[in-house]
Length: 215
Ligand SMILES: O=C(O)c1ccccc1N[C@@H]1O[C@H](COP(=O)(O)O)[C@@H](O)[C@H]1O
Image 1 (cartoon, protein in one colour):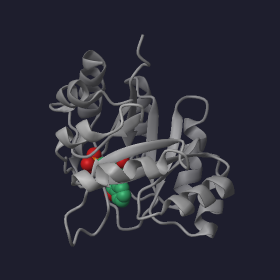
Image 2 (tube, helix red, strand yellow; image 1 turned 135 degrees about the vertical axis):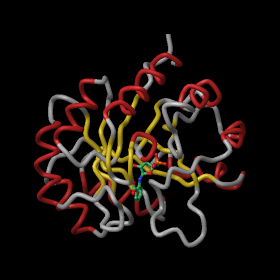
Image 3 (cartoon, helix red, strand yellow; image 1 turned 180 degrees about the vertical axis):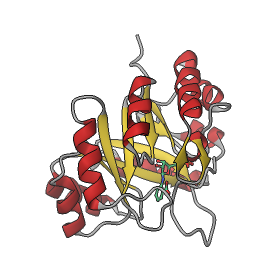
């Protein structure tokens, strides 16, 4: 039997929405620590949210090209995962994993066949890879833009590489995404919001329901 689908709800900022994601059956929640994001939470807020998640759901802090002191500061809060969503090289991912002592998810931007070829460079240095849409030139952040990518590019990916899928997923397209690319898991942020940074309970519930039904 195939492993159960992992569903991650990212960009949670409030205790209410953390409770909603848990009650709706999510497996992971993500907290953004990146000031340019509409989902940014401060270090103090992160500490509280990670504690509230502990033992109830896996927590993941999303960082963009962090320096060693940010990694240490976040790792000390005890999240289950750190997601690296910037231009970190394989060497840097390996160093951060050693420094942090928590599981590392490496987000990789996919926009063309050459990006798919690059995924294998990260499978040994990260605990999991997350394939996201490549942001358009001039974007002010590397993710969380509600943009999807051409999933057919993933036909070229080595089928032995498990991956999470993100980028523009919504309650309406998540089932099709799962049937098309058979990911290990799905990750959503914008698609379960009613405005940038404002999560919506009904959208979270619909996303998880539709994802489970397709898996
Ligand atoms: O959410 C953000 O603002 C963000 C900023 C910087 C890096 C990553 C970010 N979000 C992550 O991007 C993917 C896809 O998001 P979406 O569903 O397309 O909005 C997801 O992992 C977000 O957490």
